[in-house]
Image 1 (tube, rainbow, N blue to C red):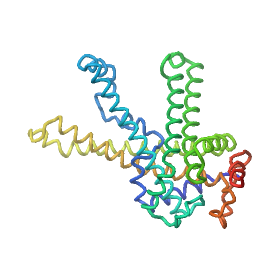
Image 2: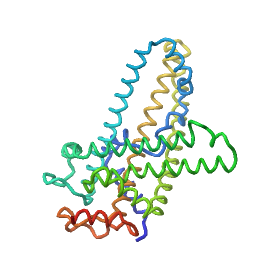
Image 3: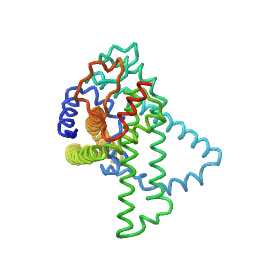
Length: 328
């Protein structure tokens, strides 16, 4: 069954516009280019390119004990951020599935009605496996990036065909693990699978429906890039207008120059983050609707009377594995 990408994007757009409360989740949801948004926004954060200088300064001014304690604090902070981000993602998926009446295996206590408090309570069931999936894909992506674009720098110090092949492999692997993280999460939440089973089903779905996944992924990245360009352009106009309007305060010495430009930069960053929250909501809704289009729900009391238009992931084993596991 061919995938109607336009219908998926149109529905994702309608839901994004109709439910502004989902934008709050978009503040922490992953999107197409979030990792570099401060860099691409050109917010002129001076420490951005000063990693080596910062490391040298820390070694000269801090004892080993202090460095170890600081590293532990950073590790704990990183763990908290990963857990919170995945918790938000789980609540988003549960709440959206209830809003759109998407078929999934709900707990016996669930009413199926959109309820944020109920979604928060149910999210605890999936937090551990979804976090494990996120950590696994982040680690795998980090290894690939380190091998192809970091450590040895052999490939990316080259030119011509070697560099092009390295870049293509890097993009392909990052795209694969990003999709794997997304689909593994959906299998855990929609079909209540363990991390290992959901991971295998995610791999199978990507391989069996590679064309549909790649087409939607490329389309979403183009849309995301266009929205990002529009956002940064509007941000440039905002910065230009703000500097022109508030410059008299700076000329008359009413506001220190450092505080003035820090305020403009901070407001620019917040506005861009808010814009990306909306785009991230659309981005994740599109992937969720693609998943429900590609995967057929198994026989289960929860799925009796499910819409017939939910397609199977054929050819491949993703849908059949779900069916088989439900029957056993």
